[in-house]
Image (cartoon, rainbow, N blue to C red; front, side, top):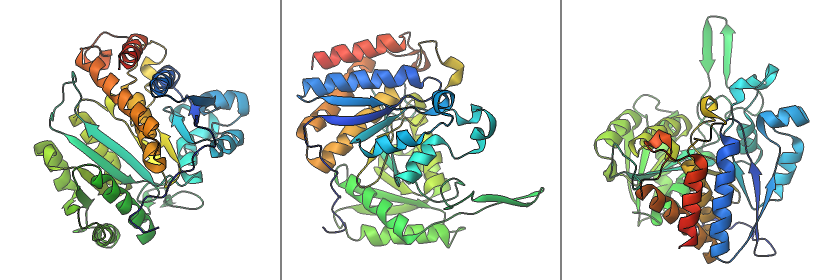
Length: 369
């Protein structure tokens, strides 16, 4: 297999997909079931089935298992084709759990989900600040400046005295190569344009290495146009000329910030889908948080997690050649677009629909597809 080819995921022995589900905290138990129902309906219309396995996770798992991410959950994930993860509110966990690596972080690290793919695209019926935006941010997910992702043991932040705080940022050639390949392969399915984002004028060694290695990898894709920007200039360009960009590849912290900016430019973080993946495994996880202030009210917006689940199916189809799974992903995206285009949306997008009503409209559009 050449370096430019995408490794293929393992296909189940039968045609049904096995997907692990973790509802999470806050609004998670309201929006994740919506995504499950929508994916089930789309799969049925496309001629295949999904076996869902709910797994203990988050605050509820602390109550039942004494930890937010039990070993049995991690063991079960190994046997699934794909995973759907709801938002978690680890800052509100009791005792020492709030200071631990987040349960989502444990999964990312355990299974080396090195790529966080975050699309931002204006949708019908959603008031976008940048109506022409349609980009994919390929965020390196395993290192950088985040304390939970750059040390084998312990934290990348430390305090030699109570008045001095330090943080270690890590950029490696190996991790940069694999996210660069992911970005270039994604660009081949879009507009064949990759933008490398760095800060090599100041962080010369770390983000300079990231920029240079991305350029080396991109040379293996002569059909892909490549340019690069400093991160501050890129933020300005996203606001001023978002339609000029297609796939953006960057390190962890920059990717987190830019993807939130892009999500708001597209209309709201409430529609911001995301997957975390390796070459062989993937997990749907909306870009937004657990929103505990509206939990239990039935008004949460499920668009992001539904869109993340569609991304998950599309990722799997791309690795396995499953045209039926690809068709189901398309049905989901089309049904969400049709629902929003009919001005049916939740309160955060200016509408009046409850989570249940919005989901019912999406299901009706799938049934009519």
